Length: 348
Image (cartoon, rainbow, N blue to C red; front, side, top):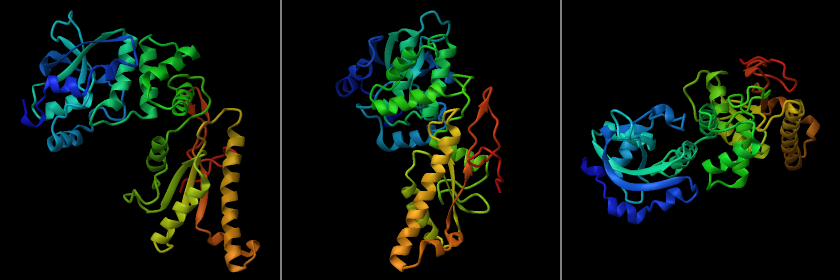
C-alpha cells in the first residue's frame, strides 16, 4: 500500500467507531471494518448521490492525502456484500471520490466499512456518508434533488406521499437544522425533475450564478470572474438576500475599480409560487427601490441636497431584470431575462 495512506483498522475503530455512521438509521447494520483489495469492489458511478462532483475533485483530494496522509478519525469508505455477483465481492456505497483518488495513486487496497440493510436504507446512507467523510465535499441542494429522483425511479419512494418524503429528507440530513431541511424538502417538491406538473422553476445560488454566466454571458459574483468580455460588476441575488448587503458590496466594488463600471443586479425568487410569482417579483423590486431611496436620504442628510435633485442616473447600482421561472411541462416559457411582468427584455 502507498505509504502516505497506510491504514490501521484498530486505530480507525478507536477514533471513528461504527456508531457514528449507524446511529441515525436502524435499517443499517455494521458487519465489519477491514482492509479490502479494490479489485474486489464493484464501482457504479451512477450510484453516486453527489451529481456536482462525480470524481472531478479527485485530484484535489489526492493532494490532501499526500499532504496529510490517512487519519484514523476519517470515516472509512462503505461497501455492501454482493455474494451472487460473478466477479466482485462488494459494491461501493460511499466514498466514490476517494476511490478515484486511490486509483490515481495506484493503491490496491484500503479500509472499508461493510454494512447491510434495505435498499432504501442504503440510499439514505449514501447521502449521509458524503458530508461525514474527511476530506469531504458537502452535498448541494441540487444533489439532494437528483438523488431523490434516483430513489423515486428505483421505486423506493413515493413522491406523492408527503409524510414519506419528509421522512426521507430527514433520513438524508439528520444533522441539519429543521429550517434548512424544510427548505430542501420544498425545493424537492417544487423541482420539475420530481414533479413534472410544477409550474415554477427554482434556482440554488450555484445554479443562478451558472445561469448568469453561461446563459446570459454575464459576470457573476461581482468581480470574482474576470474571464468574460466585457468585464462588468454583475450579481445575481435571490429574494431572500438583504438589499442592504447587495448595495454595500456593490459600492465597495464600484470604488475598487475607480467608478468605471456600474453594478448590475439580477434577481430571482427563492421560493416561487405559480399564482404569486408576479407579486413576489413586485415585492423584490420594491425592496430594492426602498434600499435605493434610503441611500438617497443618507446622501441628502450629509450634503443638504434634496433627494429629488440627486441625479439618480449617476447612481451606479442598477437592477437589470429577473431570471425566468415560469414553466410548462417542465420547460421554461419565459425569455432568457424578464421584467417584473415576465416580459422578455434585452440581455445585452
